[in-house]
Length: 117
Image 1 (tube, rainbow, N blue to C red):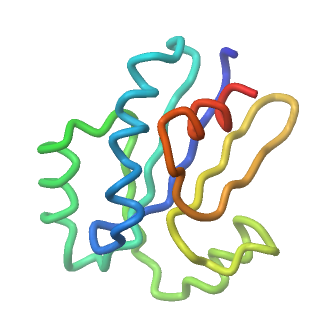
Image 2 (image 1 turned 120 degrees about the horizontal axis):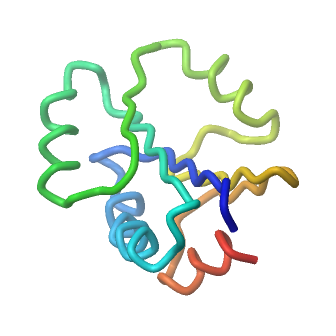
């Protein structure tokens, strides 16, 4: 399982995103150290302080980035040509390839199955 990267696109204003974030916190504790998390917030750059405060308050694991571009369509097409840009959106990258999941995970088990299977 080592060398696995989980990337999650989210925003503080996105209800389904916020509801599933605790599953990522739980998964970070349960998974081996070779699994790393990257979170990319779609909040406006002007909301950077609020996003950082949210990350700190909720102790989100991993590395955190925030969109600075306003040209989201080019970015979204670069991530995956079939992605419409709705969030949450999660990608798992391994040396064997990638898996994409559009929409929120309903349960912690759903997220863990997506990451580990």
